[in-house]
Image 1 (tube, protein in one colour):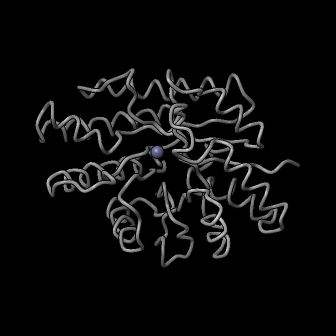
Image 2 (cartoon, protein in one colour; image 1 turned 45 degrees about the horizontal axis):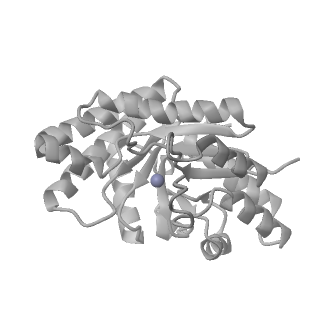
Length: 280
Ligand SMILES: [Zn+2]
């Protein structure tokens, strides 16, 4: 039986990128499942809360196209991308911008409830230094997202500053305050934080570079693999290629560095633990 292979975090570009063709490349390399993360699109600029619907619909339609046109099983996550708070602030000022982001989180939860999206994501805080006000507003918006995830019974995928065991602990405690189980929180773009004292119960989605994957496997198999693929043909090599997760998984298996059991855990059991039975 073929081993399941999930890329837990990719982006597809509806106009400038190769979208479905990119996923075909993933499929040819052995990939079976993919999670397409929402991001802001040039084609669907957001100015008011309701604009997020049009923007999320781009991600949902890309997911539907992949499911219709390839053999890969695709899922989508939707949510207000953290840096959008800064763009909205320029138009509306801080209070109104925060309101719009909170409402965008509500709409994301609605998309999950309606079965259009698998989880809320990627959401959180900007990965670059921001003012104290933006930091606090981002945390409030994230806390709201975690409460919604708890309510809907779904997972939430975090985009934050570079992870440290301390920041993972802080985020885990935010989940506790929302009543959201820690294993429903995915830290995207995560270093190989596989040990409980490194991830504090959050699900690490490890960037699938060779060294990071080997470092993760040396500590255990409770992690996900991702490329954070950007689907931007003008910037080849800027991020990991879309075939990386299947190629890396199959190469490690061939070298005896990943057992079939570990592959099943990483690519099927772990995503099921986090995303629930909707992931299949
Ligand atoms: Zn991303």
